[in-house]
Image (cartoon, rainbow over all chains, first blue to last red; front, side):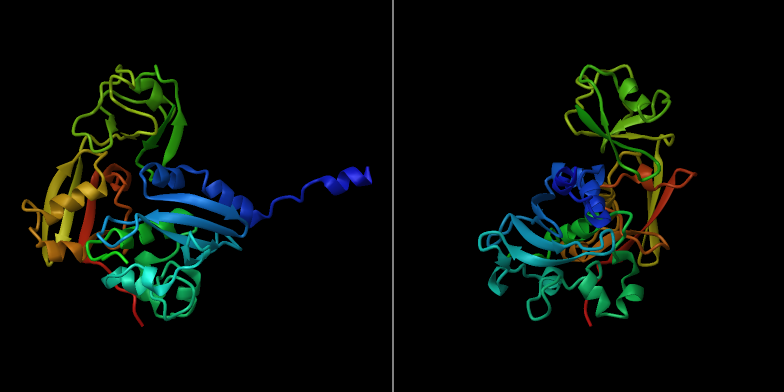
Length: 161
Length: 155
C-alpha cells in the first residue's frame, strides 16, 4: 500500500489548476480561433504564448512571451522570448514603434513595461491611478494580458522589429 | 461542433451542438429564445430560428449573439461632441471604431485614428475589439463609449 501511495501524483497546486482551467475556457480559446495567440509550451510555472503581430515588411508574424505564472490568477509577468534560441528576445528582435517600442524596451527588467504586468506595476506607484483601465483583471485571466499586448502589436504605429 | 455564444452578460460560452441543429436548438442551450433575438457576429439582420446552422452559414467555432435588444443605440463622445448610431447587438467594438473614426463619424485622419481607441464612458475600461455591443449595453439597450487617446506607459 505504501508503495502504491508513493506512486500517486501529487495534487495539482491551485495556481496551476487555475491557469489550466483558464486556457481551456472560451475567452482564451476564442483568441486562438481568431488567430490572435497560441500556446507554445506549458512547463509549470512557465508558459510560452506567441501573440500574432500585424504584418510589417521587417516584422515577424508573431512575438512570443514567456510567462511566470506562480500565484495565478494573481497578475503574472512575462519576458519577450525567442522561440529559436529559447532565451530572452535580443534587443534587435524586439518590436519597435511608439507604444510597442516602449512596452518591449530592453533597457529595463526582463518584463514588459506595461501596467498589466506584475513586475512593471510593482515598480510604478502612479500607474494604477493613471492607467486604471489597463490593469490586470483576474476575472478575465490570461486573456487580459494577451489582448492588451495583442493590441500593441497590431497598432498602426507598430513598426515591426 | 462547437459555437461561441455571446449574450448580455459579457460571459462568453462555448456550446457543443450537433451540426444538423437549428438556430433555435443552439440558442436554447442558453435559455428560451424569441424569433428575432439571435444574430451572427456583425450580422445586420436576426437569424430565422428554424434555419439549420449550415443554412445560417454558422461554421465550427463561429460566433452568435443572443439579445433581447433588436438594436443597440451606441453614442460615442469625442472632443466635446457626440454622435449616435444604432447597431445590431452582435456588432463588434471593432466595427463601431471603424464607424466612429470614419467619414460618417468623427472623420479622423489615419494618424489620429492610430492614436485613439474606444473606452466605456466613465469606467475607464477599454473593451476588447472582438466584444459585442449587445454584451456591453445597459438595460435600456444603449451604450456610451469615449473615443479617447491611447495611453502611453512612461515614468
